[in-house]
Length: 117
Length: 113
Image (tube, rainbow over all chains, first blue to last red; front, side, top):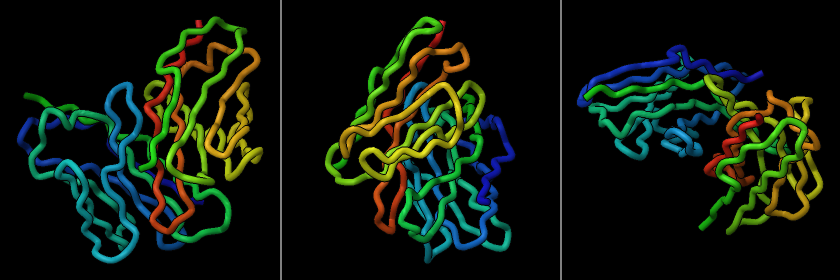
């Protein structure tokens, strides 16, 4: 069964500092990987996704993530955090094949990001 | 472009009352549809998903049910709400194309009192 672990429940960084949010997955085949962001009281917004090819993927809002197959990781990074980045971040993994049924994503438990002025 | 609508945004209901949350998708056909619940301090819990009209799969047995009366409409219901049903409910859709992903609605904050 597929699973996603986000080991950091809460991270606090200062505005302008760099950020890395960790995500480890367990999956039997090549996965599709996603990062979502959720502002308070809002739905989830897709930041970026990895399907194949270049293991460093660029997303919206200046975020990037790197797929490392050997470490089963898909960590999210941003060089300089802005106060508006304060939110909850979810990593998700899904199958790269079509079984004809609904493709279900498995989400991590989320990492809450606080940005200090 | 595709859009997903979810309503109401907030809802306060007494214990034992019925529930109906609605989700509709525009700009696509035959989407996969999902209901998630997010309890405070906890991750996303998949409640139901649907691959077509009248086809509902339940992930967690509970006090809730789901229906898909039309291709792009997904409804979450309860006959009698419990306090434990409080939470943030999210609807999402995905396509069956290779570059799939989930698009989420804006959510419904349900408080059972």
